Length: 328
Image (cartoon, rainbow, N blue to C red):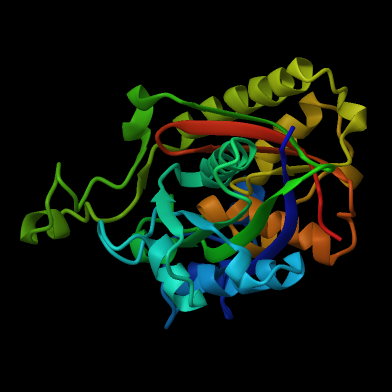
């Protein structure tokens, strides 16, 4: 039976750094308050790069580490809430063009911060059905473009970046299981109201700043903690894997307090938990692959390592995954 395996990882963080001290000069906040409430110390900001540029650079690294020729890639899927263009072409098509790849499947998905988990499920299904052999998945975000830099409740949280992975057919170290879920009834708690069909781009929507992300932070926090805790427990129980068998817990990097709450429920110590939120902030769909890459480059992630991933994002969407690392 064909199995899907994550055989390589790559990431890219823009060079521009925005610290909490920088934000103190922009809005009424403080380094102490941001650190205590979120765990974030700094985030990266892309200045002269588009979302596709970030994704392309992460993809190059993932491809190099996969030991595959780029001609062996037969699909590119990109998760993003900050596409280069409003509706077309897809950011995946733009990345494919930058890689010099034509004639392959390329499309975007929109699942906000859960994007990478959704990518894993789609790629796993395509590989295990026999439809594709090698799929490049990319989570790329330039959230700075949808950020209201006068809104201190949200501008402190997000950053720019990209992560990529190659998913291939393999006989070992496969993706064991992926859960994805959603609840559209709570979509207004984390939303970018304009400038699409409901609130088309015009002087009024721009004046009302509807082109920027809006979030009901306390509501999102409470729902995220409860939802993620239940989801990771459910996927472990379904697959009869006790928490102590997990080598690395790699959650979405949104808020250190959310990560700590789920970590404590599973009785994970710091040696099993990968945390990068202090360096990058919330990079939405890029968050998990950037964290996996951090574990890889620091030597914590090894061939065969058993990873537990989880994420929660706008939509609402959420998901979790259990997988072995199939890279070298």
